Length: 245
Image (cartoon, rainbow, N blue to C red; front, side, top):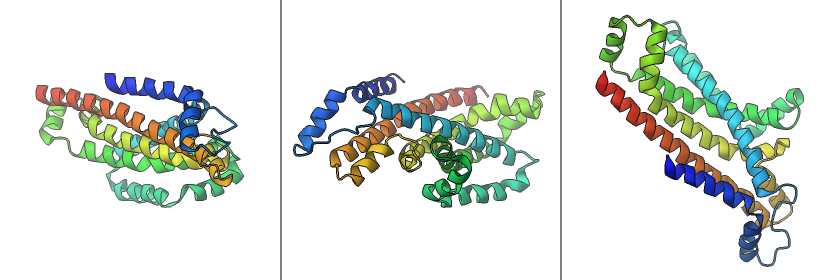
């Protein structure tokens, strides 16, 4: 986890260096007078975008994990296909359509954006939770039951720890998808990297558009490295747990 941590620190340091952005974009677009988004610094845009991604990702993970656990229990097995169909249906709605439907009820800004992102982020977490819990060796589960574990104990102490690497892979996909999709949140006035991208397109300022695009790509790569490190750590822990079992 050392190198991903260094990458995160480097990303934040670069985002905070507005003179560096001016020099870079000025060199790429020497004839442009507007080089940076005027309403927020690059670091402020990072904060806005992270807020959108963090809130929506937490909701996606909680919903996907809860639904995945439910449909892999005997009481919820009959609802597996229904839950999968509903989640897939949520993915078919473009974010703009969700904004259009949500704005009259939730207003502009954070809430409709979070709703759209949360709907988009549920599917990878749900699919990987079902796959991870469904692929556990039967003998391991039987051993846990044989030593007297109740279903809830077996879930928390055996199933989830062993399935954690697969679940984390779904969380990783969900978060990266949210980083990209959150740029559309600027349509609803939620800020983030979509604000300079749209501002640059509307005002024919390619440097401003590139600012938002570079920030989004950098954040996606940084978070992917961090979550990839967490995924590998969980996989190593799961291997040790499996060996002990």
